[in-house]
Image 1 (cartoon, rainbow, N blue to C red):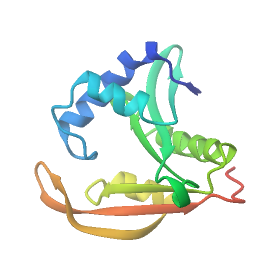
Image 2: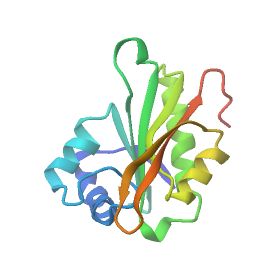
Image 3: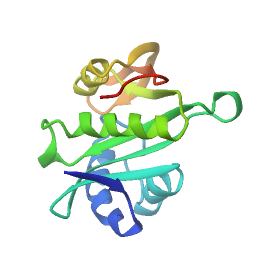
Image 4: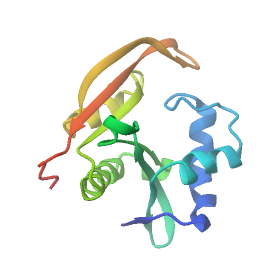
Amino acid sequence: MQIRPATDADFEAIWAIFQPIAVAGETYGYDRDISRDQAYDLWMRGPRVTYVAEREGEVLGTYYLKTNQAGPGNHVCNCGYMVAPAARGKGLASDLCRHSQRLAVSLGYRAMQFNFVAVTNTTVVKLWSKLDFQTVGRLPMAFCHPTQGYVDALVMYKWLDCDPLS
C-alpha cells in the first residue's frame, strides 16, 4: 500500500468512493446530492493537502488535512477520511489516520480535531478512541441520520505535540 499526495487525475477514483458515502448520508454532514464539482472543491481545493492510498494503481482510500480554525487556532488541523467498500475492515483507515498525524506534525500542527462525528458511526468512534482521540464535546441531536433520525455528534481531539506516532 502506498499513501501519496493526490493529483487531479486521482479525483475520478476519489469521487467513486466519495459519492456513495455522501448519498448514504450516514457519516458525513455533506448534502446527499452533492455534485462532483462541489465534492472536488471540498476534497481537493479547500484542504491544505489531500492524499490517496493505492495498491497496484487502484485508489482504495483518501484523506484531506486542513487547518481547523484561523489565527490563534491555526495549530489545530482537521481531517476527513474515506475508504472504498472493498478495503474496509483491513486497517486502512488506521493507516490513513496515523499517516495524517505524522504529516500534521511535520506541517507544524500540534493537535487534530474531528468536528462532527456521528455517534451512530460506531466503527469510527471506536477507531478514533483506539488511536487516542478523546471525546471533548457532544452536540445533542446535531446529525440527522437518514434512518435513525436526529442523533448526537461528537467532537474528538488529540494533542499531537511530542507524540511518537509510531
